[in-house]
Length: 326
Ligand code: NAD
Image (cartoon, rainbow, N blue to C red; front, top):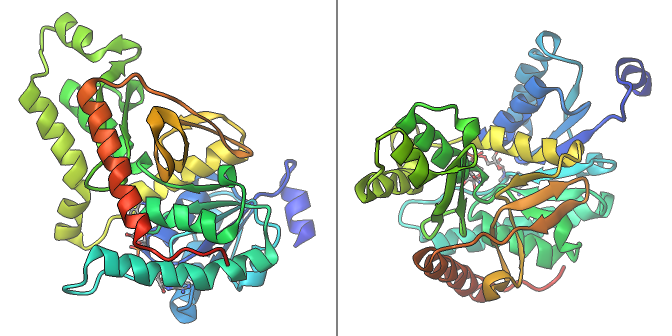
């Protein structure tokens, strides 16, 4: 194995462990195969047989991309991983409340985390399982790791959806649309229109320049479409996984390449806007040590009120959980 890596890579081999080889975990693994960021990918799941099938299928894509070793592993394989991504979880049962699902997923995390930490306490933990903000907070509390190294995928997906919808509305390259969804990854998330811009040109100025005003209704439609995207996709195909898989790969890229990209991941809010002791998403500089800095956006009054509401919702949910360190 060492020969395999040393002959094919000049740079250090990056190892990613993925706990949960369901739709999100395997789509993320596929994105990693495509972007060639990792030299080793280990998938760990309670369903060993299905994971074996996923690994067989994924590894057959490798000759058509770039070299990466991918296998169906055990928790001991977390040793040496740079980033451990958790996508494992239970899905909502008919009639089950979100809080009951959260309690079940917290119980799953209580099983998973000690097994991960037994073999690796230096990796960055990246959580994708929902509700992602609360489970990221719980992972930080349960693990006792430095908060800068325990993060959630947060609203990276929602921000991508926001940029995608704005770019479609104006027929522009989405990469030139700079706009963030902040707060909870969920119903209380906040679309920050006040600082949305096209390549540095404030949205209102851009609209004036092209003689195409974006009215309040238009904004509301886009905001609603972002917030309801998951429901609409799940209604049609049962789950969402492509965009979140790419979102996770983008987060991992910023960490492994120390890019210091600004991404709306979920992390411990360091007292900004008077918010503390909750995880939620704000534009965050992400580098090789995890969270390098959380940025403070200049919010208008209604965005500010909505963000405080989102933080209060997070706090209320956390207060209903029993999260004692492991
Ligand atoms: P899935 O049911 O396809 O996969 C979940 C996997 O977890 C299964 O393979 C299951 O066997 C495994 N698992 C369950 N308990 C386990 C345990 N104790 N140890 C190891 N593995 C275990 O679900 P999915 O569609 O892949 O979604 C996974 C999670 O990601 C869900 O919570 C979903 O809501 C969330 N999600 C998050 C985002 C985001 O933006 N953060 C987007 C989409 C989905």
